[in-house]
Length: 166
Image 1 (cartoon, rainbow, N blue to C red):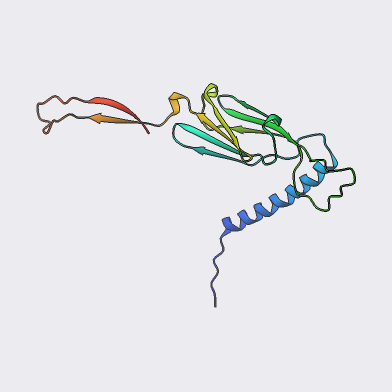
Image 2 (image 1 turned 90 degrees about the horizontal axis):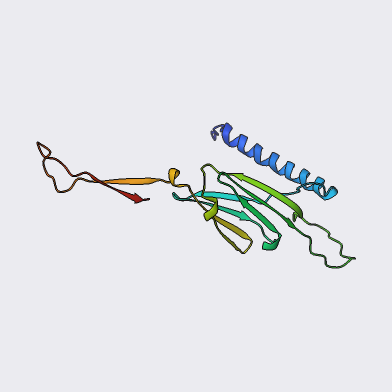
């Protein structure tokens, strides 16, 4: 007899994924019937590298000229539009899962960034933003130099601190 352990967190995660798929399909169907609001949002990935945050956004099939990127100290706003390529008037799409139309996405950042020093790279449909953190929130390691003192009895020790970037 095989013993199977009930893992409620895993079951809840599976249920959440299935519900996400259902709602994605519903929103795609309603977006096809109405062109009034944003119909899709690109996938994002936010990475903390110590001194910087790296934000990657998947934007396949979108030209850089169709993007509007705005960075504040605590958020990044990305807006744009993916347009359907017009083949001919008698083109009959049998099946399409591509998302078209306008989109807007605001990503709140966990720490403040220097928005005037952001670097951007747009290559192969991936927008990569390097967001340098403000000086106050960067991880710093302080190295204490104790000199060459071998005994601590009745001797003064030179404790010069050096800041080292991590």
